[in-house]
Image (cartoon, one colour):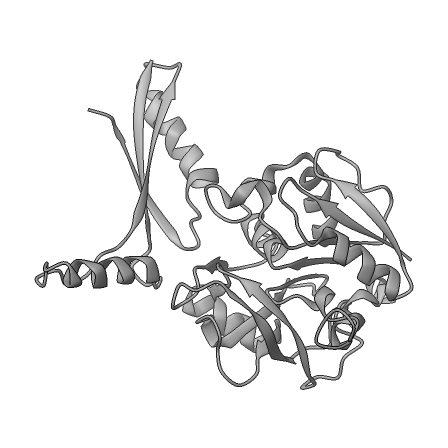
Length: 222
Length: 80
């Protein structure tokens, strides 16, 4: 399995994402924002960071990068795509996911471990978890509060497209304590906290995040 | 050449913690009559197009790039 990890100007967590992919047993393929080429990968990760310095809005400029001209139609056609943190923001700006990320309530940049509950295992990225399973990952964002219209939130909840939710306290004011959502087909997932920082007890809070990097590609045919 | 201004504001229903922090600072500064502050953005766009179509083009640009219609609304008007 070959999983592409896109590097934008200002990406920070592309290295950790590639490392997580390799640790999970897949081949990490570096993808470059300026190339209109997905190099035939089976899935793509948009990593965290501050692409284009978060100028204008987080993810607003990365959305128009040449690589996105290939990624957007591929994702619409079913390619599994995981956006983490800034990657989630980019997917929202690209309209591959509904809603938007807004500034944290309380304005503080949050950098700590959080418990999240996997609400849906029906995506290629979360199929390694049991629905309702709680895991510890790392929240590392200033613009992480998920926002969408009440109608959109109701639709996401009803369709089981809320993929992950903060367990216990809502750290950033996200609507419905939502930490991650999926596209209508389920192949595109955005997640605000960072599973790639939780793949090894030596360098993070544990290994709970690793299963995100073993996407179930067989689901594409379903 | 035309100069067109785009004002972008968060939609009223979107929480604006930056505006709230500014309102708090206003009151600490002695402006106790300040009830609320909402923070927005202003863009001044210069175009090589002096025709009436310029404002329409900028509105297209605002809808696609300068504002995120999910959380923001915008107005377009000529610069003074």
